[in-house]
Length: 580
Image (cartoon, rainbow, N blue to C red; front, side):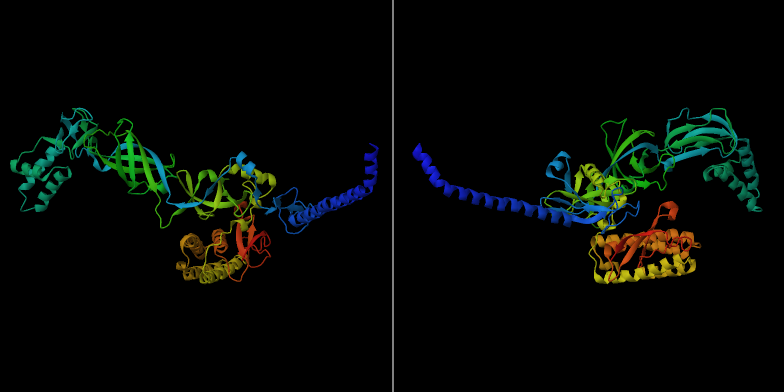
């Protein structure tokens, strides 16, 4: 034991320095490394501060510190989100993989397709209005015999329906007999006597028989003009009828109409020639098919539907008027190109605008950004997208409301926060040749002049300048742009043309300014989508115009010169965006 203690005492002078040196280097690596991390973290946080916002109004986004333009409070730093060394923009919402699973968020790759839709229709069978014969009394008289005793009786063409005795007709026949003797000396008298009988619906053969016999006929038969079913009988045996009284109604039911009710939302999917498959509730197991022959040009103001008509043969008379029918139209909207289609579940609709959430490409973690889209008609479980999306973009198709709720809590662009949505997020620059952009610049120059005319409240100059807009519009060669760009230009060009015509022809400046509002919106869409060459314009907004709905316009100056009110409120409005 003494030997062991002695050895430890001898070696302690070597072990102690080693321990001290080890502790020093350990502190150097770990403590020093921790300090470096803190410095780097602090620098990263400082770099993450890119924008400034207001604690009370999170829609405010300023590049420099200052005061809130709404409430005057000092702005606070608005930091971007950082996760796993990945920096996310301030208008994006980042979600972890666990949050994606918990919210059941599923994505969809935007595709092109030929939209189709099953349109379900309810209707009724009706008689063909072209095959209805209304028989009325051509002369006064008494019903002496009745050959049709009940409604629903089938009759042939030329079959007797009733026999009538008419003193007036007897007198007219006697008049004809007397006129025969004046046939050569007074032919007009003779002709008038014959025509009188013709107007009472007597045939040429009947009149000739009266001439030959020389004796008046006391009774005349009422004949059916068509083969069909007697659907109305207005007289009974012994009734005295006056000229113009209704006698019978005969309907040919061998061919009938089926009138379906189509709601306004269904009308874009229906056209003449579309095939309708339908069944009658009272004829189970039997299926019918026919093509649309007519669509009512008017909407019924009470029911808000338009009638859609198909025609079908009914030789066995099994289809009866007023039978209920259920129809289906497998409809397709034809076009030169396929349309952009997205699921209905991907769209949030506020009543004024429709939004989707785009998955930001190139991110390590799932990241989404809001975007406004222009919806077309419904196509089954899909919407047609007129503008706002491109093929192969990825959008959230399920759990969209949960993404929007997270965006609202973060104070970034969302469905209920339209103020936060900047126009830069909604610019979809289309592939545009330089020559086309040059032609658009000429259109912009005419627009800027008419904007100044409205600021000066000069209606006449605005009218003349509107004609220049129409001239420059004709000079824009739409063949220079293809595909989506071509279709988009055609849509906006129609608005520009229609509104410029109104401005050129209107006789008061209020009407002109209302048209200028729509013209400006179309011009903004055009230059956002196709761009400008060596020019920058500002998108400015007047909140007072059009009953406080507001109106936009374009200007090359940031200073407000309101074209909607001129001298009344020259500086009303503010700059919302810029295009270049």
